[in-house]
Length: 305
Image (spheres, one colour):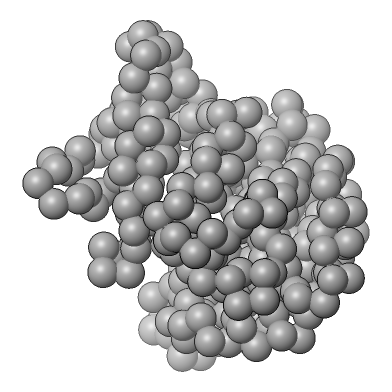
């Protein structure tokens, strides 16, 4: 990993970032199967040590899978924490392993040729994704294949923020702070490039619309439909999956229907959520159920957390 220097943070922030960089470089050298086992163990420790987060996961799983038995949901919760631990430790090879070795962890890619074709139409392309599996590996993959800019939320620690941006951009992807709004994204599409957006987080009700996600209202960003509407920009879901026993990653690109966007913000958000839901159901243990995805609710409806 290239040495990063950021003197804008406090001494504690710089020290914390230095420690994280050292851990990334250390875990990047671990054998993949060993790191997968250790990640699973780390996740189980977190499940026991973090009861508040465990409660959020339990509530989300009850919302998403109401017909499942309690025992089945608890088994999924256990698997989910194991996968969260693996997500943490695999940042080492994704962010700190030499680039060819990091990209070699992507063992299979499906649907990328459709994105290639969509770019030839001259309107740019929008990729959206969820906190599912090794999404950081998908960022790395897209950066070396296409001209792409991803929206991200800046970290409070400026040293860690600089480290994260450097690691995400090292294959060619650019990072754009979401605080700058969506106007820069229109300019990127006008240049016939790609933008990437994480769209599975609860947004402020003043900015979002309520659309079903696993059959439950979720305050969802309508930005995808707004961006796509101007020039009928092609939109794809991009989803990454972790293969068993540390054997690598698989990435899928899934096109949204030709009828997207429809001009109806709720309908468009529902289409996007349905696409993410289908992807998550393929590997529900790999989704970030730790998010309070259903935090905000329509008026007169009780919040679940």
